[in-house]
Length: 246
Image 1 (cartoon, rainbow, N blue to C red):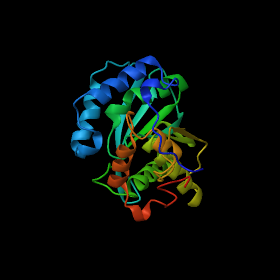
Image 2: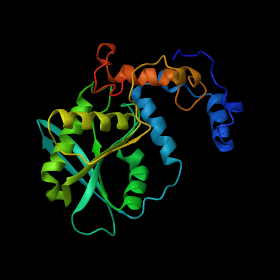
Image 3: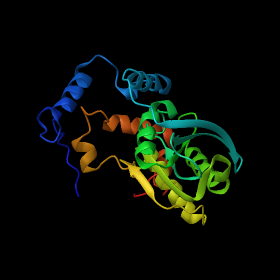
Image 4: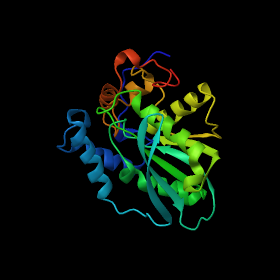
């Protein structure tokens, strides 16, 4: 389908509810710099500040931290379980969003908490190395190594490694899909399902939706270009692990 260059106006879009329009109005009329004009460190501080400005419910979970070594990689894990749970639990590996540049356990703790509390299973949050400090495919290799470790050593953290899934949001959904593909190619670990929240699956910026919603949104075309530029060089953006559906 041929991409259109007509940008949809958020203010008149009937599909956007009132409070979201108010949020977008403030975003577009403020004097802050666009994300893509910030350094990665500055951009991380913006996200962290926004998250810290709102009180959220973090009850009902127990969190432990673990450093693991697998396939020559050291990765920090946060194991999140329902506080009422006992015994060995099934689990999902969780890879966070933020364009491979932003975010960490603190910024996604509420999201993971909600998934754990409402599902009754455990989450293993993978604190992969972000870009631009790390370039593709290090984050994927760390995500796969962590998944492999839990599959083989889950008993050490009271998790059933044979009942394992992968999950992630945005760029984390991209990593989850890549881990599933890598597990298939390498004949393990066995995964029961993927849970992908608005995943990044394509590196093509010239699509109808990219152009229709390119500006005046929370996530813009320029911002996504900035994320990709920090993460992976153009020469590797067609790799299946970088763009699983391209």
